Length: 209
Ligand SMILES: CC(C)(COP(=O)(O)OP(=O)(O)OC[C@H]1O[C@@H](n2cnc3c(N)ncnc32)[C@H](O)[C@@H]1OP(=O)(O)O)[C@@H](O)C(=O)NCCC(=O)NCCS
Image (tube, rainbow, N blue to C red; front, side):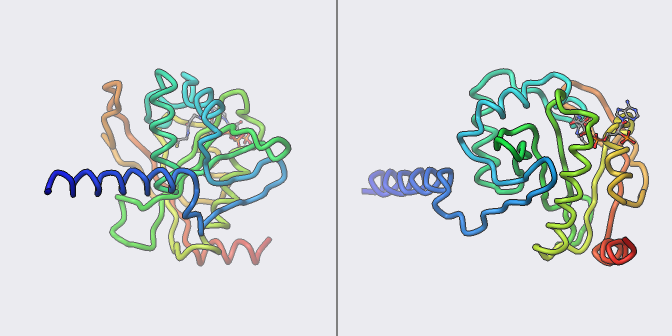
């Protein structure tokens, strides 16, 4: 009897997870539209583009994650992101093709529930065209106008100069460096630089523009 009950519960959990992956509970669909890109929820049908982007050897390591070794790993990571709804697709506005991702998630650095952290990565084919700067600006606006976020933070490995530049161009203030911030999957021990932007600063900057 107990085994039967466990089986039923397990099946219900699987069914709910499947429905969630298919978007059945999508009360909170998000779509932000910029000049060249849009930011939207990830979908299972993004998998081919997601795998190409995430297996790019130039992308993951700079952001601290291991490039996808195969399609199955990419599928698992993508499914997790779809369920968690903290990571979004950056797509070409013209054809909806995924070229990168951007995340807005609870930060572990600040003990404040209205603080969020930003993370982002872009397929190397699209670097240095201002695309991530456009994406981060859209996300800042989203975080401060559509969620209860009051402070945004963002960090980069201390030797990641492209990321540093994106963060500066988006108006963040430098908070400081954490030495020995993290040991990465490949054994590297990295320092990281952190920045923040409060809702008040965001609103003041918007008024000045
Ligand atoms: C970091 C990243 C998202 C930047 O995206 P992007 O669309 O190329 O960024 P932008 O074009 O908006 O801006 C890049 C800026 O960095 C500058 N830059 C690029 N490489 C640089 C380098 N090695 N040294 C100094 N500046 C550099 C560019 O010149 C540009 O600045 P500018 O507009 O003043 O000329 C992209 O390189 C990436 O995905 N890298 C791998 C993953 C990663 O590092 N993610 C961030 C983790 S914090």
